[in-house]
Length: 64
Image 1 (cartoon, helix red, strand yellow):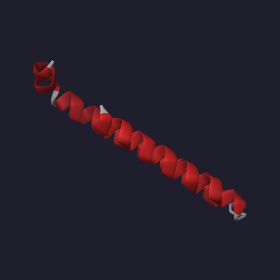
Image 2 (image 1 turned 45 degrees about the vertical axis):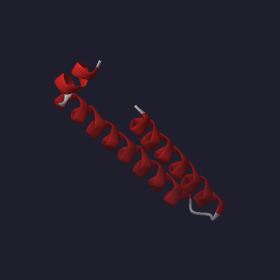
Image 3 (image 1 turned 180 degrees about the vertical axis):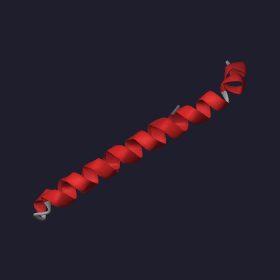
């Protein structure tokens, strides 16, 4: 669970910083692109964690 939270916080802080600096520099298009890229990357990482969890469901359920 902490690995997932670390990835989520990392994407959120990094994307927030990157996206907030772009409009200040006058790059509205780059801000939009950065936001879309961060959202897509976050979705792909979430899917990877989900697939890994589903593939190892029996091993994970034995822990609990």
